[in-house]
Image 1 (tube, rainbow, N blue to C red):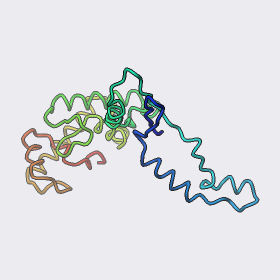
Image 2: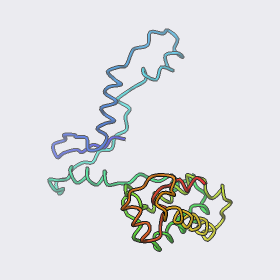
Image 3: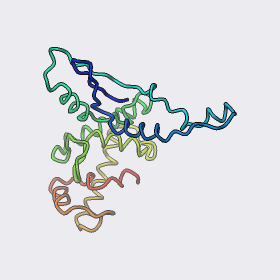
Length: 202
């Protein structure tokens, strides 16, 4: 989807999808007409099927009551949006599994508030609750360890955190190098899960 802003005079400008438009233009310029007389072979030539008239776009019209910064405001709002996580997509995760993961992640966030950040681009030793939920689901951890409840998941996670703590107390025991300041904060709050995510695949 390409997002367009429509000004009061009907002029259109791209507010999201500039790179997609650029790639489409490159593909269109490189499109090679099929020389085959076989219709089936021609239809299988995906490069020859590119049709810029069939690209889905979403238009945001500016109203007379909109502020002059309407386009800029839309651009900021769209780029602030976070992608939907796999665990939250309809029909992907079982409802019971999602609840177990959500409840456990919420407990960890409430118990270690200094180690969680709202940004999904946070850096170690911090975790983002949505990234954590999605990572737990994607790892298949529940099925792998036959975890059927929030308490069982928390027990497993906190045991892993304790093992990581013992290793990182020596500063060289982890499986990857970590920033010294990140390690010091992890030690201060006794929370090591955000230093690395290899623990999810045990």
